Length: 351
Image 1 (spheres, rainbow, N blue to C red):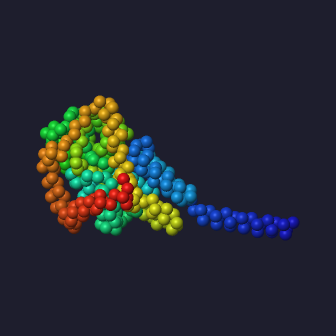
Image 2: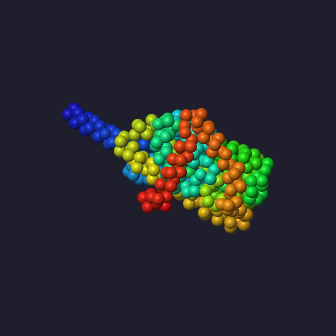
Image 3: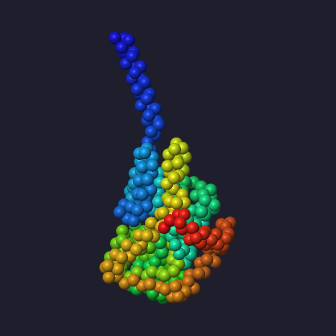
């Protein structure tokens, strides 16, 4: 009996060691992904879920991504980047402009009439992130993707065709540069995150908002206001986004799981994200068309009146950047060159 017990004990110990070894090899990881939009909105559904699903699949199930939409882990949208830095969430998606002036280099893509194509700008943004921001402005977090949305525009309770139409209107802006733009065209800027827009419009706190087409459907904007002003040619403005991961969480992964994260992040993912978000503009616009809403289109010729008012933002921004020890004009030139570089290389990254 004693011998049998010893044999069973040795076998049990061996089995336990084997199980521990297998568990250590499997090293299952759960990542909490936190963001501010409802789960059914275009970016969570068409970008973030795609990223998360691919990470889970490519890791063979060793990484699980729990998705927390609509700020379900607590806090408010401007706190998301700090939640990633502090480890409250493992991965966050957020608008960089929700923290004004903290990541100033990203603002080059928010300048008025700067961006003509979201894929080209997202390409340039990632390149400039690696060169200018990775080890400086974003040194406390691991960035997985950088991108911009499609053309920013107005959605208002009365028609807007020329800057004078905005005189005295309370318009939501999503960043400090957009708020500056609104002031220069005669509107009163109201800073608030995207999720607050429906309540602001329904209660009359806002007369309108600046957002791209794609997010209007999730926010029911075409039901709340019936006028939309879009611009031909370069966008009136764009906002910048990041998908960011807690630095310690990333660095603590085994090398093979780091590779899974890396393979699903970076330049190609950034282009995919920006392009996918911009592609969602068309279907969202059609909803407003089907509802019979009024869509005002500002031609490139008519946009010159707008540009004359907002173009001084460039000089102001360059001066601001000089105070931060950065060459703003050089960043503008670099961004334009990189966006042009992308348009000549479409076959490599695809549309």
